[in-house]
Length: 81
Image (cartoon, rainbow, N blue to C red; front, side, top):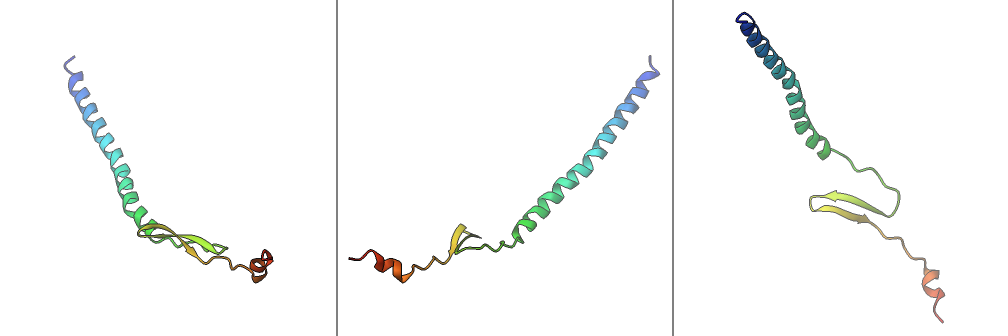
C-alpha cells in the first residue's frame, strides 16, 4: 500500500502539468482573438451600395447618407387644376 502512494502522487502531478500545458495554447488563442478582432473591425471598408441612400458607420453611430431621388417636373404639375 505504501508503494502505490508515491506513484499516485507522481501521476497526479503529471496530470496537473499536462492540463496546464493543454490550457496554454487555448489561452494564447483567446488573447490573439482579442488583439486581432478590433483591428479587423476597424479596417473594414463599406461595400458600395446601389441606390440613392446608404447607411454608413460613424463615431456617433450609423448614419443615413446619400441623396434623395429627384421629383420629375411633370409629377408636381399633374395634380394642379
